[in-house]
Image 1 (cartoon, helix red, strand yellow):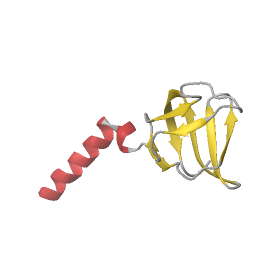
Image 2: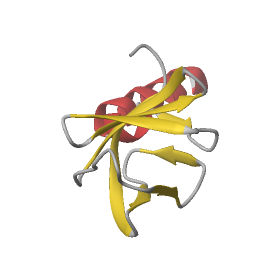
Image 3: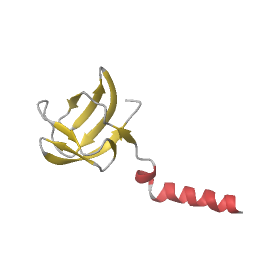
Image 4: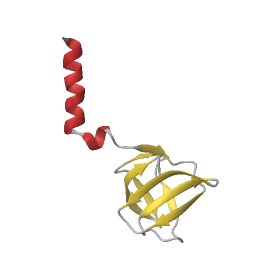
Length: 96
C-alpha cells in the first residue's frame, strides 16, 4: 500500500511540475570559450569540446563578456553578460 501511494505521488509530481522535475542543469564553471548561435543561444567549450548549451533572454554578441554568478546552473538561473543580469533558459548538457 505504501509503495502504491509513493508511486502515485511521484507520478503526480511529474504531471504537475514537469519543468521543475525534468529540467536539465549543468556545471558551467570550467568553460574557456563560447560560441553564439542566433544571438541568444550559447555553447560553452572546455578546450575544443562543447559541454553545455543554453538559451538566454538577452542578445549576446561575439565580443560580449560572460561572467558566472554561480558555477552550477539550471533553467531560470542568471549569468552576467557585459555586466547585466541575463536569465538562462533551456540548459542542455548532453546530446546536442
